[in-house]
Amino acid sequence: MTTLGFQLYSARNFPPLSDTLKLVASEGYKEVEGYGGLYAALDEAALKSFRAELDANGLTMPTGHFGLDLLENEPAQALLIAKTLGLSGIYCPHLAADQRPSDAEGWYAFGKRLSEVGKRYQDAGYTFGWHNHDFEFKALPDGSTPQEQIFAGGPDLAWEADIAWVIRGGADPFAWIESYGKKITAVHVKDIAPAGENTDEDGWADLGHGTVPWKDLLEALKKTPAKHFVLEHDNPNDVVRLAKRSIATFNTY
Image 1 (cartoon, rainbow, N blue to C red):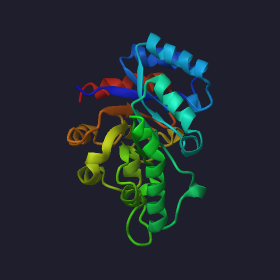
Image 2 (image 1 turned 135 degrees about the horizontal axis):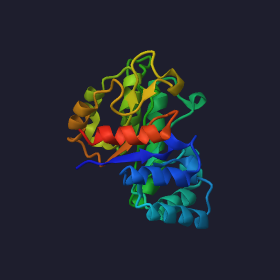
Image 3 (image 1 turned 90 degrees about the horizontal axis):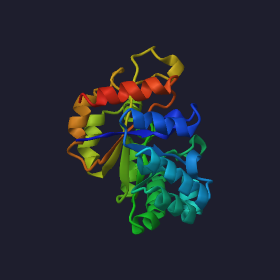
Image 4 (image 1 turned 180 degrees about the vertical axis):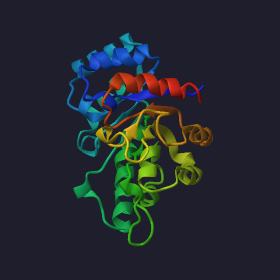
């Protein structure tokens, strides 16, 4: 049976982390996903302490987000983080607006750059890939999309598909799953509130309380290599509510 993990970024505004780990464990989550702000600057002792806290709560961290700067410029630190925390998948999560190419050639080159960065992590035994937002699905001057060009330039990249961002980018997630499903090794599971609702939460919703057809999407995603399904909400105003209601919904699918 597919299980639901929890992206710890969702709880960044609700410290301390120790309470979040206890919360998600108590609600039945077995996996969490990390992000750079949690561990990028930690030394080995602090990383081991973090791992011990995960273990104490019965949690694993199979996947994590790593910023491009860390991946490119501090590979030894990135590998230390991944090894110490027990990761199997490393995903680059974002590219700042002022660094984004404006044409197909630029995005193709970015995909090639990501692929080059990823080789050292793949050689070390990790899945390495890209996590999308919405900007990758906006048409470029030649009619293609950044997401297509990233994968063309980096054909060996895996994909952590953030389905709700695909939808916010104006694309059809079912079509992308059909076309690029073989690349999908992890999935972000989050929901979009009906238009005009949850404006204080940037229009996101707890799983099952929005408009994303997750039951059908999960059926489609079963045909992909996706192993990890990770709950995320970019700006919840109640993390306890988010954790409780989302896993309750997921367990009905």
